[in-house]
Image (cartoon, rainbow, N blue to C red; front, top):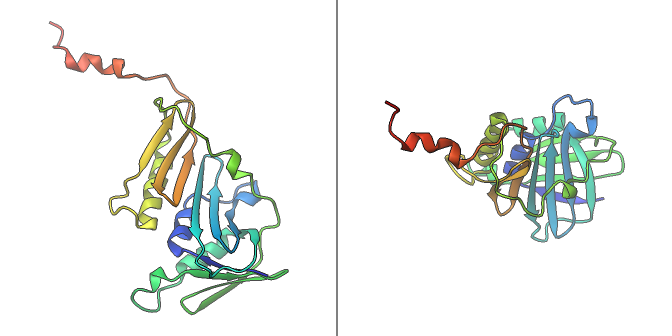
Length: 203
C-alpha cells in the first residue's frame, strides 16, 4: 500500500500528452512512479513524451508504479474546486492490491490501473541535443504551450526549446517538467537560405 501526493497542475499537463484510444492501450493513461522521496508523472503518444517530478515533503508513503487510465484522469480534472485556493491542493492517491482511490477537494474516484508495462521513458530522454534546426509538427508545440499554461509556469505559455536536428528536441517548461518532442523529416534549412532578404531586389 502506498500514499501518493500529486500536483493537480502537473497531472493536467501530463494529460495533454497522453494517447487517446491508441491500439497500444498502455499509452492511454499516465504513468505514476512514487517513493517517499519523489513522485514522477509521464505520458506519451509516441510523438512527444511529457515528464514531471514532485519532490516529496515527507507526505508520501511506500513505493508505487502504475498507469492511471485516461478516464480516471479526466474525472479528477473535472472536479470543481470547493473553495478559492483549493486548486493548489494535491491529488492524493491511495493504492491497494486491486483497487485504488484518488481524492481531491472532497471528491473521490475509485479506479483500477491499466494492466501493462509503460515504455522505459528514461531511454527516450536524450543526454544532449545538437542544437541543429529541426522540423516540428506545430500541433506538438501547441501541446507544449498548453502544458506550460496548465503548469502555471508562464502566463504566455512560453517555453525553452532545444532542437536536435533529425533527433529529438527538448521543450523545457520548468526545472520540474519538460517534454521530449520527435521531429518531422524534411529538407534541411539553414541561415544561408534567407540571405536573399538582405540583398536588393533584382533589377
